Length: 544
Image (cartoon, rainbow, N blue to C red; front, side, top):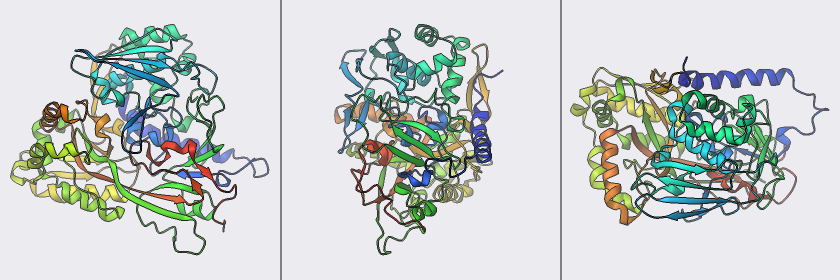
């Protein structure tokens, strides 16, 4: 028996979602019985599937779950207008103690509670650490947790300490990001455990004790099986329901310990929803766009309330490559990188999105960070196409997947196919209805705690990555340049990820909605949705 069924998770989430929607359709209430249709309410559409609120899981990372869960499970640090990380003092204060082993002392607000009235405690953060530090068991993807040696936590306490490995901890502000700290008490309740038993199990290191917790952590926050007792929130919103079209209705969290959300309800629509129909219904107020010029809205029509803003995003579209199988060896990965033409991939992304984005080769810092120039002598030699060098891997096949059908990413994969074909490397788009990191070959853990090899349905996952959270490296500042250079060199030697291009971002915004601040990082434009305000209770475009 495998405790971490990676492949079943990846495919099963899609199948389960479909089954749920059929069930919902069969039991749908009549209009007279419904208080309001989802399209009658304030709508925000994201450009990804809505499969989970667990942003630390492989599925959550693959679908950028932070877009939804960032205001359900807020981060310890939030982005500022100039890119700085600002402490979320409503939730917690953090004090960094320098030394050979950096320590950070966290003090949670005594008023911080979940939407069921249960206090936010250090056990929630211990759970996040345990999940992030044991990816094979939990199916997690939180690479910066590699820097942590231990978390000291008395069950139920409001204070805890994170102790880093010697010389590590430069990216401590990236720990406990949006959507990664989840309600440990909800998991414990399902398992008939108290806080002490939960903490003891997490600290035991015993896969047999941890496995039931890991299963619920991984699967209990799936939206296809929404459980209101599990998905309680400590942010300004909580989930009220999941609709038949996959839309998630958020309502104001009355237990929130900070400023109450300005809007009492926000319906978050997945990428699969018909954007044009939402516009016709007057339901789309803010949205992530797949292209800068969508054909379902006319900005020039008289009375149109909409504006579109486009920019080069902060994230880097990246190939994350399998740990097992053909592409497990650095030699083959390096051969693959020699046939990938990042400039052609960026051009393909730009053409489909309508946003001109640059090719990117740097791993460990943001592509727009001035420090990237000081890594150019390491990065640039790897950006040139070298077909003879790539031919080392001739006769191989690379199956690439991404989270849902997407014309831009399909064009990027096609660009890779064209550039790698002369080297004898066959690049195949294996996305079908959608893939996640859980579908990439890797390692699992069996019932005796032994490592197992997991076959994948894809060899690489294509998606956006935040370099500061994706790589366990030094803090991005000039005084750490030597360490950053060493980390960049190491990444090019190992090549578990291949950066491709900056991510293009476009947003549609109703001018009648105030306090909307464009942000292209992990939490997206909804990073401050609790501050959004509307000038009228009526929808701003007339339903047809």
